[in-house]
Image (tube, rainbow, N blue to C red):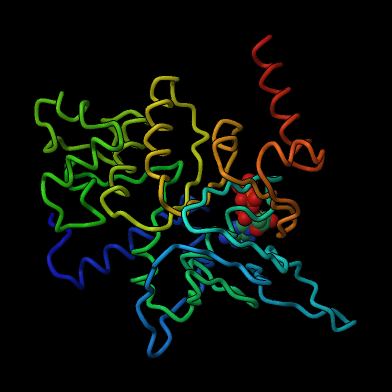
Length: 309
Ligand code: ATP
């Protein structure tokens, strides 16, 4: 099947793709049941990304509608609770914190998978609610732990985000994501069919194809939902290296689960109960002896304990 027949179809397909991408943040069926209809407002303009500065200002959000108690107070605790977060152009910031603290939700609000209930999120000063979703989503690349590949060729899977891309561009993207050599070693090269959901490829290969897709899309802003799935060491290194290359010169938010990527980030923000409770470099936060330092020690000691077992 040809996925790219007309521009309209491309748009529809990329929306569908985006919803599939969203499934990596939360399970697909959950998302489809709960996703509110986010729409372009009349006269929405194109997002113009000049630098890629991101600003969350006093943002509140909850998945449930508000529910007033007898005292007139809202009983639904917001998942994002008056969050403030500025991210400088080109910066890589890692979000860490307890499970359920709001890291994924923070990221879901940027491409408008959901709309904030109060406060605002801007990109280079433009409120994400004022721009077309198409231009917003074009500006944001997402790499997730659960990679979605469709049953087509490797070429189709890489060029998904930019159907007009030339073979040279596709090969360059594959090279940047450390997968070109592997593809060229296959008898059918870029014409190799990946199988249902990429079943003929290893986890690391799928991930690098997904990364190549984002290289080709070339967005100014990147959201990385860090892979926790077990890749073997060599594969993990190749993925890690291509992710670092991808993040260079883009404003990047990492939903971090592991120490290695956290330490490479320019800054770390600890998200707890929907708020950024501390923020700084790895060294600054360690010296501060707060939540991050505790979290780091816990993981570090966990890793050491596992190694000595
Ligand atoms: P983790 O590290 O476990 O991924 P997190 O810090 O990313 O956690 P979120 O996934 O943003 O946290 O979750 C914040 C809160 O919102 C949790 O209480 C979670 O149960 C709830 N939540 C997340 N997604 C949904 C959803 N689609 N519908 C309803 N509640 C949700």
